[in-house]
Image 1 (tube, helix red, strand yellow):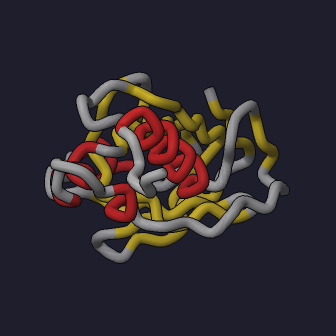
Image 2 (cartoon, rainbow, N blue to C red):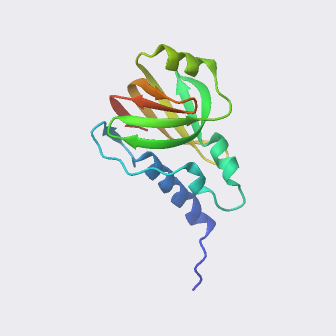
Image 3 (tube, rainbow, N blue to C red):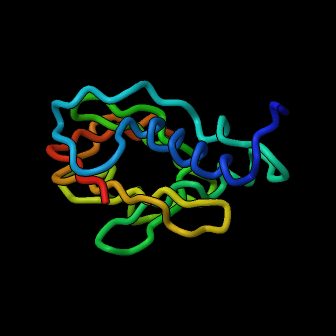
Length: 146
């Protein structure tokens, strides 16, 4: 019996880790749920793809049903807050919302190595509460996983 992990088991394991990273499994969760601690996407790196390839497009940020930008990682999800780290391709619509404030809905889509969507996380009535130039913390009322 060998102790190697087959490719068939690698993708489901990576998917499960990604869901744990966001702190949810499936269905919908209320803001009062206590999600698990998160880890950077680079912990999913294994096999022939480098960690930089995975973190470049693993999370897509959608605002107003439009792909706004790719995120480097999701750092935290707790009770009714989430912290997102912006990638290199920062866009003006997200920057404007951060500067202006107010509540909006947004979606973070977890993508696989081939840029196909795995799961989407819809944050309802979210507003930016902290921004340090790289990471943004949003407060939201409800999280819906689909």
